[in-house]
Image 1 (tube, one colour):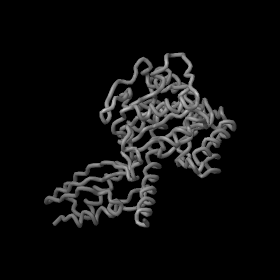
Image 2 (cartoon, helix red, strand yellow):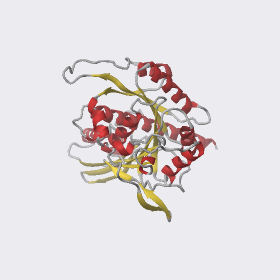
Image 3 (cartoon, one colour):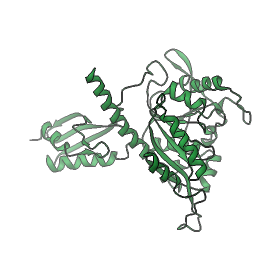
Length: 367
């Protein structure tokens, strides 16, 4: 006879590879029902873009077939949740946003906006609900990368108040000051005005339910960064750099900003962009135009993981200029790099959320 106890005992042999514990102990098995040979249950993952989702599902199926019954009819629903305690945003339009990821760079021109755009689309392709804020107030570009420069936010309501409805493109909800400023016109905003504009992009936009809200920050370490970290409080940040020494020096300053005690935003990883160039006619050759391994050395010196090394590919620039994020096309040579980056970001956030949940539980018991 198949019982719920036998099924749970079998599922104790399935570990979450990142969290290093079995899925039963982690409380990930939900709504278990046994009716004769039919077994149904849900596995609640810590992130909807979990790159190991299929592997965990197959492991559950194999465990039941091996430990319970080879004739069992198993139906598994893979769902997701956020473990961390909700931040104090319940009365704002960020209420249903689960994770906010800041994409930063110390230096301009390293491809940070391209990384942010393709990360957002890649997370969507992995099954998540994703939004993107173009917080580069002085040099917005996401409306161009997504091909929506002739569009603008619509109208929406939140708690009876009028808000902006984000523009949707390639499965991603977007808002940018680029929608408000005429093409070619400088955005002349001083510190307090720039910070207010940033706040409006977040709190005057009806985002709805999102698994990830990616934030494309301006280069440097100025007012916008401080406003974001103190007003919005991202869950995590990633820092983008090219391998060259000048960019690495500025990237280190960007990392240091997030590590200031009064800010204290976890930097979950580094991205080396334009890591090498491979001509189409010489597919086995790599030319390290901006130097070699600079971000890898930065990773080793800071202890921050290197999430991805993305090559310099001419068609990435062409796609961005034409308003087509290349990751949307799975046959594009850069697509696999962006999808792997998204998987790593989702994985690191999953681990971070789990660790934060443990800290919250410890504080709760101590109090």
